[in-house]
Length: 360
Image 1 (cartoon, rainbow, N blue to C red):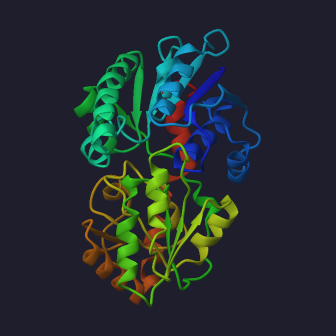
Image 2 (cartoon, rainbow, N blue to C red):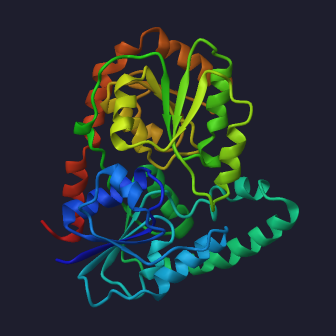
């Protein structure tokens, strides 16, 4: 069976890209995308995956999103493959021409259209907010039109499954994303905490920074980049202003460097708004490290409160208290963390996806 996987962009390293490339390798599938950055793929170690680029998008939001959608609408690979998989927010705009298909829903129905709409609207200056409202109103209609051409929806968590039902009135099956848990290891419980996420507003990284500002004897390393054309560019640059000395932004790192950071950190922190799933906390647990996460979204499905970490409200003082508790004895979470991570292995993901597609 010839399979193609459509994915929005491959330009920065993140969980979505890891999932797409892992699935492509295991299925022998080709990846079709925009804004293809070969260096990002090399850093992930997936040079063997065939990637077809539809070209670059316009680097001005929301023209970037609109141009990506147009590229997927206009492309035609219907005679070259037998099955199609769509990933992320815009790739399913190719669904009308490419069937049978399924959508692997990684970040819920487009968050800026639905559950994060009010948050993004508040970030816009007045004139920009008018344009933002018009763009969302129009683009959401097209988004939902092409979603009607998706045959099957797979959600990456129960949290996402509920939102697919709420916003799109579609049923979906849950298949947790793959984590290459065998790649991760425990070396030491070092003198720094670790955070791994794109530098986007919905990640609420300012909560992490303010918490560690109150903990001068602890330190935090934040791994993650951003796309220059996104609104996150301004957000990321603002994060660098007035950083406390015990917090460092490392930007993007190679996969081996990331594994090393997991292996040597003291513990892990994630503060995203209603994180759809969150592969990074599972990677941390696979490294034997406890997680401070939010009591919402995917963390409720991956982190066992009090056993593999602590779940708190998005409140700086609560985060500070959780960091203090784990820092007192980070080793006591080790076995539970490693055991919990085994539930999210890549082999389980591939087996379940093959069943849906019809391989087995």
